[in-house]
Amino acid sequence: MTKTTVDRADLIRKTETHIRELLAQDSSGHDWWHIHRVRASALAIGRREDADLFVVELAALLHDVADWKFHGGDENIGPQRAVEWLKSLGLDQPTADRVGQIVSEVTFKGAGVATRPSTLEGSVVQDADRLDAVGAIGIARAFAYGGHAGRAIHDPTVSPEEHASFAAYKSSTGPTINHFYEKLLLLKDRMNTDAGRALAAERHRVMEDFLTEFFAEWKGEK
Ligand code: ADP
Ligand code: NI
Image (cartoon, rainbow, N blue to C red; front, side):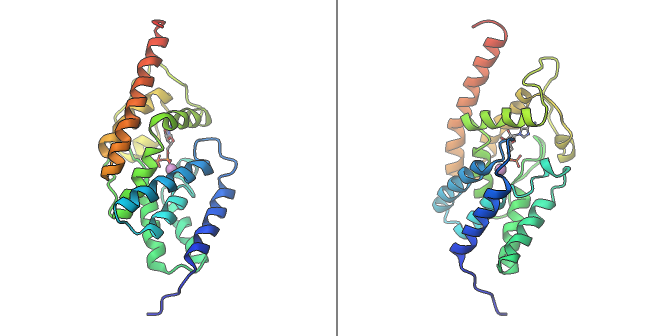
């Protein structure tokens, strides 16, 4: 079988430009700088894990190319677009499919749904994406997303839910504070790599401190 050789650096550059343009107008926390941070974290973790950094970098760049949250809940469109894009640049089908597989496995699907990726490279990219959902940046992104999606900041009459299926998670419309209990505070115990776990533990504490302060102010105690 003849395998087309591609200029890997050129392919990465073109993918970066494509994503940068595509996400330039985003105000939901899924902007280019989210991708930029996820790529940096993914490469750092991937190096320590001895992962295939070419696949890691492409998947990090493409992981939110068409997020289900902005495409009518369709979780297949992102992986499809990623594979189509890479094939249009001449990447061989098996490698494009490896990237597509990662894109399909990265996303969080609800507290009660297992989402451990099937490959080392997927584990690395998922950890990097999840690190950007926690800590100070995670707090900023959660409220950016909440505003974008028309969610209240907090409503004490609406309790957090434990979503048992991706469908239930997708259809939830709760306030952003609930999202901490429904996803963000759960992530530290669901990291795949040692490096990801250590970083997530630190960022977890930042969110706990934030929530303690938030509720103290809410109750007028401060
Ligand atoms: P994933 O694919 O795992 O959702 P993303 O890169 O799309 O990962 O990041 C999701 C971002 O959107 C996170 O920062 C998360 O806090 C935010 N988000 C998703 N759902 C909600 C929600 N219901 N309320 C607030 N933020 C949310
Ligand atoms: Ni992401």
